Length: 470
Image (tube, rainbow, N blue to C red; front, side, top):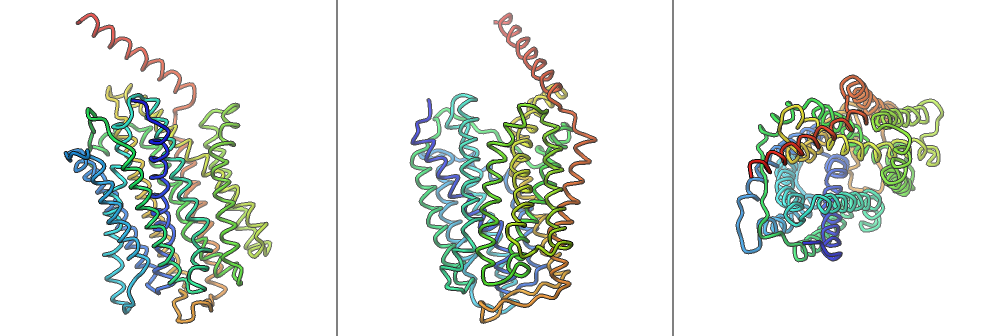
């Protein structure tokens, strides 16, 4: 059964909606609860980290529940629809916190955020898991995966670019009210997009679904040292990126400052998003024509580190922290590098599957790729904990005054600490990724070609044996 254009479009629209929701939560929950509502930054960071690790650990359980579901609507549709509707309500509540005391908010926030994570997992796992159940060939599976990942990136970019300026406009200067209205808009679009997806994309009646426990995932991972290195690299790279995405809004609001800070932030995120897409779709293919993937990977890590060095020097040595043209230069380098790194880590994971089959005799493709969701949640949890504890350490005061238009004043030492926090730590994390990759990763293009030939020989031998037995 070949997928129609309508089905592909519906699946892509579903990815846009769900990643708009995820991006709003991943990038702005800390800012909303710490800066606007005044909860202690360290407390927010620890809660977010604990909730995301809890959520990541629940992914395999959700996979088992989906696999065991039998309804006339299939395995995936009931979870996709129910999870979406529940998550939309929880998202609205998450960004429309009641007027509670400090202690009351510290009880409300962990509960509502854990509920958000659980309900999002209810729809996210069946969304990605249904790809093999609605396609019939590896080519269709790969094509639909690309559509999903590309549209998901587009949905995330929409939220990163529009959130701050939309919040300012919708709230008429009151950010707390603006976030509530914007969350409602995102939630409604989310429900509509997933209903379109569920009503147009149907699974095959003969489809099956593999499941795996957390213990099984890690057992398979530790038997494949190259997959382990790739997963560790993803954790380090994503941690650096999430630290930046969580702190850059504070930088523009309190360091760049002024009445135009929201416009400058929007321009920075827009240029960064475009750079990330160009990195994936233009720069990587150009470099790939001449260079080994491992060389490109090292180049991208050095490019991102160089971007952070330039950003630090612009702010600390050259006094250009308030120049948006100057700030765009390191932003372009960092985000373009991350775009290429996201492609490369996916390629390396795929290559590690062949390596693992040759080494262990078992092909753990589904297990290795299922780690992607797990490590994204884990790395974002590490990043928000670092960001939250860092904001507490440097003494940044939230803007939770009655007059939200009047920004809270920050000391010179706090602003210096913020600059160091958003540059030095990501640099150090990326440097560790570079050292680990340089010393431990060995799947060069030549090795990959050899592995492909070995796998082909293994498959040919298996087919010959089957024919002889037949």
